[in-house]
Amino acid sequence: MSSGNNSYKKELTTNAQVVEAGTNDSSNAGLEILESQDSSNEIVNQLQTTLEKHKGERQLIIIQDFPDPDALSSAWAYQLIAAQYEIQSDIVYSGTLSHQENIALVRLTNLPAKRLAIQNLKTEDLSEYQGCVLVDSQGTNSHLTPLIQEACIPIVVVIDHHSHQGEIEAEFIDLRTQTGATATILTQYIQAGLLKFNSSNGKHVKCATALMHGLRSDTNNLMQAQEEDFLAAAYLSRYYDAQLLNAVLLSARSRRVMDVIERSLKHRMIKNNFSIAGVSYLRYDDRDAIPQAADFLVTEEDIHTAVVYGIVHDEDKEIEVVIGSLRTTKLTLDPDEFIKEAFGKNNQGRYFGGGRYMAGGFEIPIGFLGHFNDNPEYAKLKWEVFDMQIKQKLLRLVNPDDSVIHTD
Ligand SMILES: [Mn+2]
Image (tube, rainbow, N blue to C red; front, side):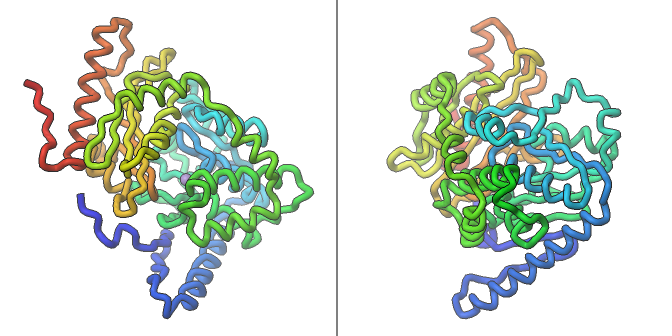
């Protein structure tokens, strides 16, 4: 795997222009700040123009299938901003809220996100929407994206901080791969005046609290935050409710999540400072136990990167899919590059996964083999095949000299 210098290049991309935000050379630091202020004003103006153009319309805000706090809070902030322009919108996801903190966040703040199950979805349900918005996503982590395309609903706005996941077409694109959280970008829009936060407005206080949570959780409690993330957090500190945030953070892990973490500990394989663990089958609702297990494994001494994966099955819908998470503390390891290199692309040329700074994920459909089978022998055999195949793909990068698993 190569880790070229340009993988950490500062990028601020819109569909109209590519603005390079300069180097870290201290001699032009002042100039750099001015330049980045100019380009962020430019972006805010562009968004404003886009919103004005779509006044009175109805939009669908799509977030990843298993939404995280950054996606949830950013989508909410967008919804409140869009309402200023008489754009009504609905925040939707097709999977489930799985992490205990996300469930608490949505309940405690009344965050208006709705589950839109693909099986129950008819094209006419989508006909009331004139446009769709992708927040903290480029559409690759949602099963709703193909349906939107089928229904010919144009993508109006994309706001994200993940690495490029391939071509996207939209009227407005704000893709900042160096920004710690999408919540930072939305906070900057609010700070620039697209929405006037008011600390006596309960909804604003809750949204600010959600954004603070999103920002913190995507930057490892601000430890990986950049200057702009700190500035956004400082702005939010005027409005957010610290007690409410504390209540969200205190939500306890379920017993089943603890079990998955235990399995990851038991089955981890350590090689060249990587910790790799397959956790076998887990229920759809516990999917978020995978990133939590990866968060935990990466805390072990002498480990810089953890990868945890398992087969997630949904008994009702007979769906099975391999889902994995990567966490790293190694600055020179780009999770996006690593995952794309390890697993490659599907038949449609889409990568099985990707990432952002210090974290990544993948999702591999298992197609014909993907039906849950009650026979324990069969289930065990199937898991072993996937486990071995994934390990082999990962070891090719972790330990290039000895990557082939011998089966004899
Ligand atoms: Mn994010």
